[in-house]
Figure 1 (cartoon, rainbow, N blue to C red):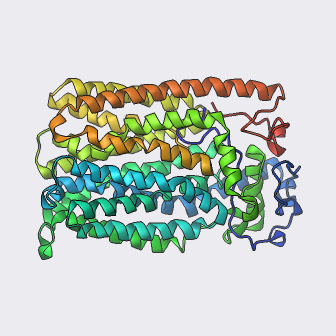
Figure 2: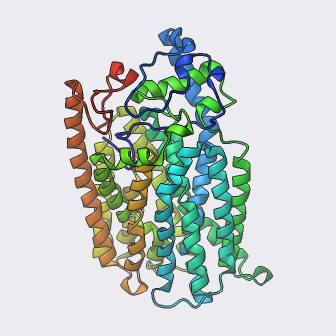
Figure 3: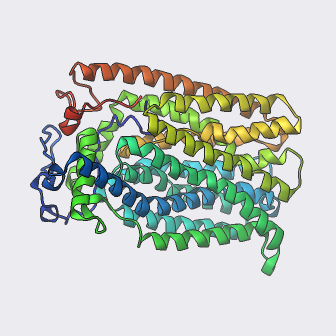
Length: 508
C-alpha cells in the first residue's frame, strides 16, 4: 500500500526535468519531445529506438547499470545533505544539555517555544517551495542554495543573546529548511520507479536517524573539549561548527547533483532514453516536459481533489506526532539520572538501531512489494514502547523503551509528489508545534501525557493505514475491470499510456 508519504502515486507524475532550453534534438527519438501542455489530451507514446531495439536481457542489464549509476551520483550527497538538515534543526536539543537554557536565562516554557516555532516556519514554506521547485526544475541549483542559507542561519544561533533572538533565528531556520526534504523526495521520484523508490527514500531517511546519533557524539565531544575555548560556551561552538560544515557541503553539492534525465550530461544517450522511458512505463507519463506545463493551480488541483491524499495526511500526521519524542530525546534520556556526557552518549544507540531497522524494513518492502504490514508492525512496537515508558520508573525497562521508540516511529517505507507530498509533510509536522509543550521537566521521568498522546496517535496511524489499504484494494479491482479511477488517471481513461499495457496497480 502507499507508504508514509507517497508510495501510492495517486497523483500523476506532473514531474519536472530541468531546462526549458533543452530541446528535442538532444534526444534522438521524437517520442521524447516536449508536448504542448494539455490537461485533457494524453499522448500515446512509443518506446524510443535505442530502448525498443534492445533484447529483454540487454534491457535488464542496461537498466541495472543505469540504476547503479543513478545511485552513485544522487544518493551519497542527498543523504549527507539531509543529515545536516536534520542535525541543524535538532541540535538545539543537545545544546540544552550543553547549557544553552541556563546561559540565555530561559524560564518556564520559553525553551519549548523555541523548539516549536521552527515548525511554524517549516509548515508555511513546504507547499510553496515544492511548487516553485516543480516550476523551475533546477534542483541542482535550488537545493544547495537553500542549504547554504540554512547553514548560515544555524551558525547564527551561536550569537543568540536572549529568548527573542533565539525565537527569531529558529523561525527563519524552519522557513528555509522546509524546502529540502519534500523537494528531495520529489527529486528522487523523478529518477526512480515506484518499486525502487521505497528503498532509496529509506536510505535517505536514515540520514535523519544518523544525525541523531552524530548529534549526541558531536555534542559530547564539544562539551568535553571546547567548553570555554576562546571564551565561547560549548553549545555556541556546536552551532558554529555544524553551520560551517553545512555551508561547505552545500557548495560541494553544486558540482555533484544533477537536475533530471533529459538534461544530465553524465548519462549516455541510451541511458538517457531508458531513464525517461522507464518512468513512462511505470505510471504512464514522462516527467517534467517544460515549465509552461507545470502550473501551480494544476498541481494543487491534482493533489487536493484526491481523497487518498487526505487519508495519507492523517496517517503521516499521526506517524510524525508519535515520533515527536525525538525532538526532545536528550531531555527524555536525561531522566535516567546520568551525567551530561553519559546522557549524550546514551542517545546514540537508539538512532543506530533505527538506521538498521529502517533500512532492513524498506529493503524487504521493496523486495516483496508489500507496504501495509511494513508500516503498521513498527507502529505496534512503538505503542508498546510508549506504554512501558509511561508506566515504569525503573532504569532498565525505560531505556529498553527508549531503544524501541526511535525504530518504532521511524521504521517504515516513506515516500508522493509535488503539492501532495509537500502538503502531507507540512500538515504532519504541525504536530511538532504542540508536541514540545508535552515535555516540561516537571512531567519527567515518565512523561505520562506525552507518552499517552504518542501511543494514541500511533494507533490512529495504524487505523488510517488500514483504511487506505482497503481503498487501494477497491481501486485495483476497478482497474482490473477497466473502469476509470479518478486521481490516479485522467477521467475517461482507465490507465494512461504504457502503464495500461503493463497493468498498472496501486502498491498495497
